[in-house]
Length: 164
Image (tube, rainbow, N blue to C red):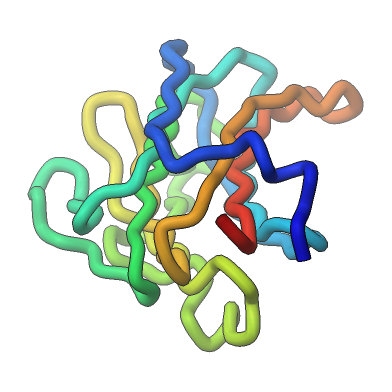
């Protein structure tokens, strides 16, 4: 099925500059007719930058160790924010977002999805948090940031097309 919505998307790296001290506290996934979606929820209204692009293998922030993911392609999703527990907001002290290498969504949880294969936490270093996103193959994507006007939470949205 051809989707007009995804026709203009491509596989080139996308970047936005701003850094924020608001904390990444949740990663969610969703399925849509023409794409699969990964949403990073950041606890605050500040504009948040990102770098998203395909890489041979995502590496852990700081150590450089590989963080392999299921699928034939790996998408590095780098949010310019600290994760919960490594921020300075004071919200939920002692609670950490995840440990480097943890599956946020395992291949079993994403079984049957058209594009997504896995989402893993690849760590935090120098103001940025990295996720490793496993994709069926190198597929077009788009990235954008939006502010939820009701709860004042910033979201980084990564949509991955089902087809080229």
